[in-house]
Length: 142
Image (cartoon, rainbow, N blue to C red; front, side, top):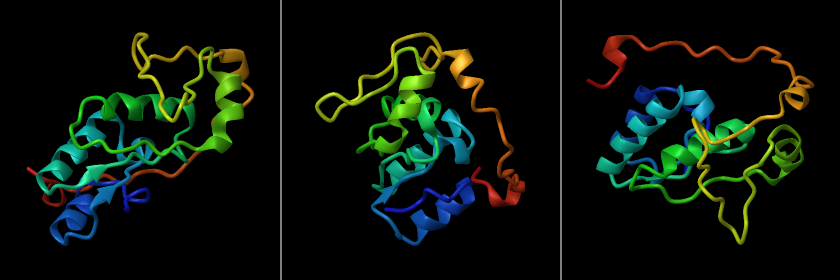
């Protein structure tokens, strides 16, 4: 399994072409969101590669987004769930996404299905992050 540090389709394409993994674990916050993760999962399926979204960098919002993608791709295998993030999930989400008997129910509310406690979330202001370099058209799939 690999892919938590990959951020472009071109990087995943190389993994598929080299048959370097049976399972990929892209991080939805690193690859560019729901549609990009869905596209990567779709190509992975053509190579018989399973999807196990990376969950350790994404916190509650990324978890909700990853679950939405997981629900609509046939090669979803398992969701990485970081137990260490649970205290934060319980603090910032009105109804946190927590496992019950090893499963997390798919959020059903509007959008990602989460309602956040904005006052609690304000305690954790954005500190900046890694900027993603966009690939050139030659690096991307058609």
